[in-house]
Image (cartoon, rainbow, N blue to C red; front, top):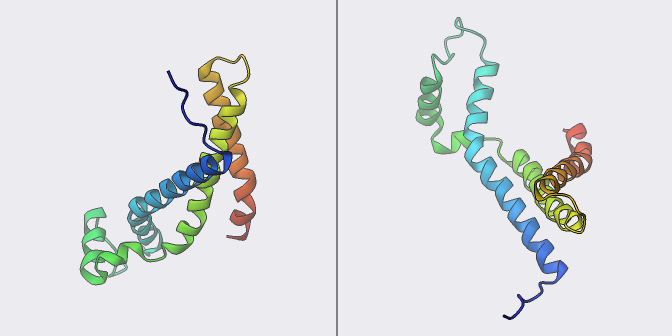
Length: 134
């Protein structure tokens, strides 16, 4: 049986970064409408405000009716610029830690847990300066 062709580190790293960045982008695109609705609820001034939303359904309907579909995506650029590289770092470092820990005698479950911990810590270390500025 022939061995699988060896992929260079650069190609593998690019695939991991692209996969992570894509996952971050998709996450933001799917979840941003909920963030918009949450923010609208947080800034309303209570029931005495004539523009206050009565329910989640009312909020969704009002945004769609007055602002259209793109109303749910207002302000999406900053989260995309933050989340895409954040997920790219996390995916890449997770795979690298997993590969590194594969040389140890740790059980597979523990390898995954430690790789996840390491990638989360690395992500926090890399992203924290941007969060402070934000």
